[in-house]
Structure formats: C-alpha cells, structure tokens
Length: 233
Image (tube, rainbow, N blue to C red; front, side):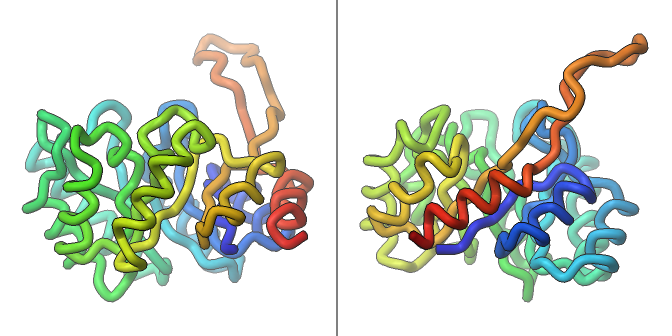
C-alpha cells in the first residue's frame, strides 16, 4: 500500500520523507481545506527533497466554481509546477450544481500531461458520484481523492468499496480524510492500494498577535511511521 502525506510546509514534507512516506500532496492552509502553495515552497521541496511531490492547485478557499480569471491562474500554476519538476497535479472544477465541470477539468488534465492528475475532494460533494467517476475516467484523470462522501473515510468505507468495484482499476481511488495509524490497515484489508493522510500534530495552538489564532500543525514523523508500520504488519 502506498502512503501519501498531505504536507502543509517544508517541514511537513521533510518529515514525510524522513519517516518513509511514498508521496506527498503539497499544499498550504489545511484549516480551509488546502490551497495552492507558494512558488518558493514548491521550489524548495523539489530542490532539496527526493520524495515524489504532487501539488494541490486551488487558488482560494470556498467553492470549486472558478471565474475565467481564476482558471487562468490555475493553468499558470500547473505550468509552473511542470517547469519546477513536480511529479503530479491535484485539482478539479465543479459547476454551480456541484456536478463535474467536464470542459474545464479536461483542460486542466490535458495541460498537466504527462503528469498524473488527481481530482481532489470536491468529488465528495458531487450529487451522483458513480456518474462523476465515469466522467473522470473518460477525461483521463488518474486518481480520485475521496472519503466516500462522508466527513471521514472510515464512515464511507462501504461506498468506497463500491466505487473500487465499479472502476475495475480504470482509475485509482485514493482514500483520504481521517486516515490514521489506528484505521489504515482496514483500508488495505478491503483492497485499497493508496491512502492519504495529514498525520498532523499541533505545534502552536495560539497566536499572540491580532492576525488570528489558527492552530499551526505539522505532519508528525512518529504518526507517519506508525501508519507505515500498520499497513505493513
């Protein structure tokens, strides 16, 4: 089983590599579900680390419906990631009714090539996930990051299994949300090949200034090692 760590900083990425994770999804601001990391962060990770690095391309928090200007930003960010030597792209676009925006998502997949493209957890709010899965297969997505349309993947495990049966290995179902050393092996036991976890620990719960008090987290080396141990027992 392959373990992808959602890394929100250079330290998180380094911890993932040092602990033996197989891949990272690099992003910023996990407290809002993740947004595109800075150019500087991407460059430093690619230059100084060897771990396979997929990058989340999401220009802002909020919904997944984007203006033409925002779509141009997404496209520029994908090209930057390719130029820097990243290994994969994580993104996606929805229509106002939460269905897959086929036209624009296809454009992003084509632009990302030859890099693999993961459709992110916007999938978990689509109204017809089985239909959406077929659409993503048809337009060439490599993976779907999903919790089975539940807040935590363990609660969506039965639906995740149904999706895996439906896809017949035509696309990878990357299981994410709430994956930990306590439940990781359950996903392996039912046949999944890839899991996604942040393995976060709190390193600063307060802010002493007036810019806000969003908790600061980092991916924990110990928890990553524990997940790996659990899936290889």
